View (cartoon, rainbow, N blue to C red):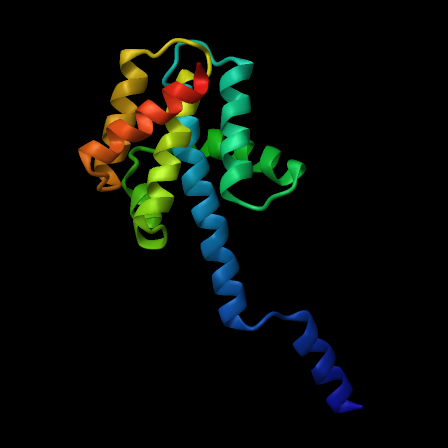
Length: 153
């Protein structure tokens, strides 16, 4: 009887390592979403095309259901409004993404910037600062921009 109850609790409570990994995944997803949202917020007016670009980027980066993506974007927008800097987000991304994943993220950020057909100086500045914090080489940054611009038409 006692063993059965212990087994039941063991099945219900994930091992600490699994819980830690889930927390890391959620934090990484939020950090990525915040950076995408920051590009969207850099525009004077946030349009549907930019919001769709953020959702498409998150769908490409993470295996999440539509309702999870919607909640993540909502949380990212609130977190971005409350954040005083980007260092905590980019540090987490640097710790968990290899360079190809960071480059793909920058490319997605450029797609968000180009989504409305106009690229503002503020959007460019946000991308430059984030790329710098992610230690993206300048040539790779420019290539990501060119790929995103080519995709946007």
